Length: 142
Image 1: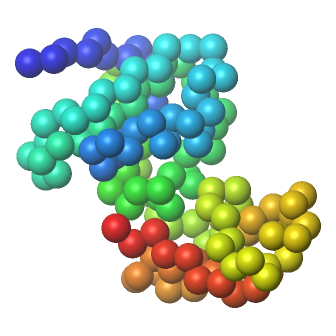
Image 2: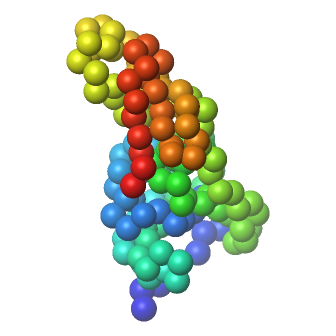
């Protein structure tokens, strides 16, 4: 069995859908952090069969709340003094910006390239967001 050492202080992003860790790594721009980052892919999981895990050493200032949009199963474990100080399940954010792009070719974001792609949560149960500008539907349902 593979063993990855524990963290004295940091964050563990757990219960990532198998194969999803790299999308999260790139979205959070973890390559820009000056700390150790461990990515564990296809770890055995009783609940999920297989899962990915990301361990980040040290304090970080990245907004992790938005990860609920990328994967509904993610949990965040904040580690302090070698122990889990806080464990959070991530809710779906009401608004998101810069995670996905509007697919409507007539949307103002297709014409005005500098406009940020913003979406509002319109159907929590089905994880449906709508473009703030044109109301185009976007769903992350997997």
